[in-house]
Image: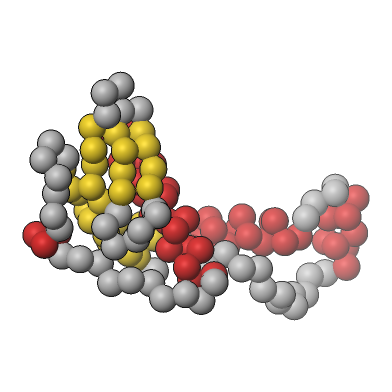
Length: 123
């Protein structure tokens, strides 16, 4: 699922940035450069929303960017994060015996091979 939230970027004296989310109290991050701060803002948002979803907690609605109060000297930017449910699920699959024997001999994880193959197919 995709989430978009406004983030406030505060320039620090060391030329880095501190990022906060008005709608997600406690969700903060930092970046050494603007590019790094953008990356860290997305990472923080993804982890925060993922945690809320995993804990079955309410995910707050995002404030429209034009309604965000910005302290003087700071700026606001929309940050997008895609959060996927990465919880493992059990599935039963069938493969030929010879293939299973070769996988065991090669010390292959069938789960990892299937995940890699599905990821490639679904991209």
